[in-house]
Length: 170
Image (cartoon, rainbow, N blue to C red; front, side):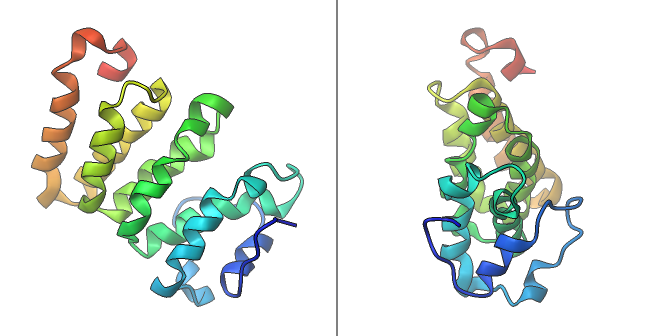
């Protein structure tokens, strides 16, 4: 069991097992709402869940939590969720790399400054920064009114192209 406790309906995410494709589960139908955002953020970041036995349903709870945050368009989750991006470089965590850009896309334009700051920080890993750039792209695709802000954020990074890894420039 996780070290932290979660009350229903958030606790239900601990038992859902491996998620299916993006957007196939309606987390709001479980009774999750804005009042659960703090607990969902806590679950998404819960290191004991990320380190759970790979055969346990617990290991999938963070994925369900961040997908629920996406469905809630939880703007306040943008900054805390960037703390997971390191997992791409450190653990080859494909779930983080593929899902979090989509989550940021659902969160929307409020995540632009958070992702722009993350992308601009050289201390972050290459693939984590690539995921932040993909998150910006997702926001632009889903929120056309924010496209100019996305372009501005990406351009600010690309102005330093000579100092960046070619993969990041791409």
